[in-house]
Length: 174
Image 1 (cartoon, helix red, strand yellow):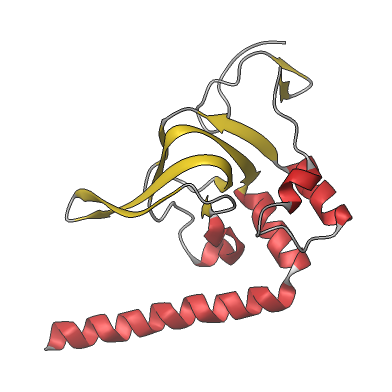
Image 2 (cartoon, rainbow, N blue to C red):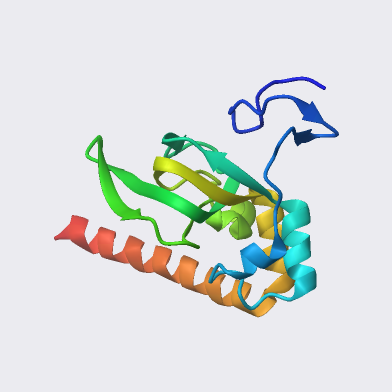
């Protein structure tokens, strides 16, 4: 039993058997109420609860653009602001309290083919609850449960990257 900081740097308090004392439990039925998980089987929801965790995060920054992308976050309740650096300033790209929105290490399924860093920053504006899954676990689940969707997403991602490079090259030439 002891206190300390989790892998994300936040204080996790006293722990017994690797679980924070008074940690909120993951409820598969609560996950089913989120659009991202509503079509999953009971076994898949149970696996998510076994591999993930519920975190309550106080107002403030959660992660910063460019940091190593270690976690995939799904909002259960609260409010988030997503931003991206533009010209050295933080540009808000989304502000929402919609249940089920996700952010973080969503590109983990691409593995080492892309840098595994956060593509933007996230902060919460009110105490917020999230379902959190470590990036490696998220990538493994996407690969195992959704192989066809994975191929479609990879094609879309890399196709968009190629299109972006061609457009940027043309703009430079003009």
